[in-house]
Every structure is written in structure tokens, then in C-alpha cells.
Image 1: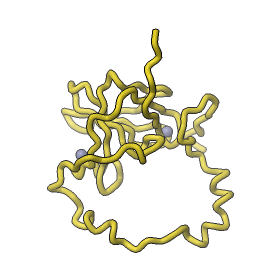
Image 2 (image 1 turned 180 degrees about the vertical axis):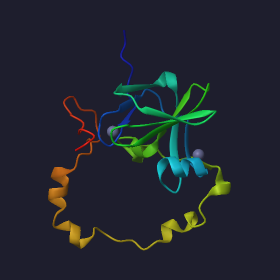
Image 3 (image 1 turned 90 degrees about the horizontal axis):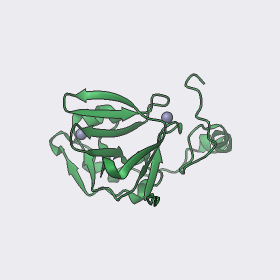
Image 4 (image 1 turned 45 degrees about the horizontal axis):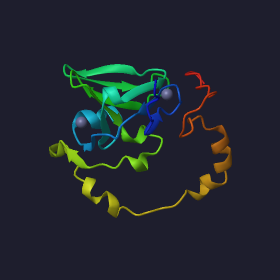
Length: 165
Ligand SMILES: [Zn+2]
Ligand SMILES: [Zn+2]
């Protein structure tokens, strides 16, 4: 039996849920609909769609919220990371691009539901640019050693933090 080649991996912030793609995404879209804004707690959603046959959960499984009569959204019940959106019966799952281990490789190709785009979206790249906050720089090492975010690659022995820690 030949092993399928993994093209992309990703997962939630705590590492309890991990996934793999065995094909390139067929869509990568920003979605400006109000449901994506709410579900991601952000100004817009960003999703990479792939056939379910080219996708697998490789560690754990997401909790599922039926956000409408037509679709579900999955998230890690331990850390809350939004992981996917899926319309019923399409055979396609759309992963949040920020949950990929290397989101640089998941480049958006179009934007949908643009009627509900927040009015300031097109000015975002004009915002003033700032480096790291000086007051946090001193403790950056400490933050790095105490942060509980899963590394951006598959791991064998990672223990997801307990939900109540
Ligand atoms: Zn998690
Ligand atoms: Zn949407």
C-alpha cells in the first residue's frame, strides 16, 4: 500500500487537533459574510477548500457547531481555534488558512460575500506599522518558554495543555 504524500499540515493552537492535506486546495478565499466574521472573531474568514477524500484529521477531532441548516463549523474544544467550514453534501472541507502550519503557502485567490465587507478593510494596509512593543520585549524570552502553542509541525510526544490550566 502506497503512503499518500502529505502536502500541507495544520492544527489548532493547543495541538489536540491536527490535520493533513494530500492535495493542493482547490479554493482559497476570503469570506466577508457576517457568519464568518462571528465564527472566527475576526474581520473576515479565510478558508482553503479541499475534497474530503484528500484530507484527514491526524490527531484528535474537532467539536462541531451546526451554524446553519446547510453547514457546519469545526473548532478545537480545548483551545477554541476555528478549524473548518463545510457545506453539507459537497464532499469538500474548507480549512481556516491561519491554522495551517505554513500559512504563507496558502495564498488567497478571491474574495466572496463582499457585500458585508467591513468598510475599513481596503485601508488596512495603510495603517501605521509598529515593531514589537518595548515593554514586552524584555519578557519575550519568558513568554516564549511559557507559551502553550503547539509548534508549526507534526509532533509525536506533544501533550496538549489541560483545558483548565
Ligand atoms: Zn486545541
Ligand atoms: Zn463566510
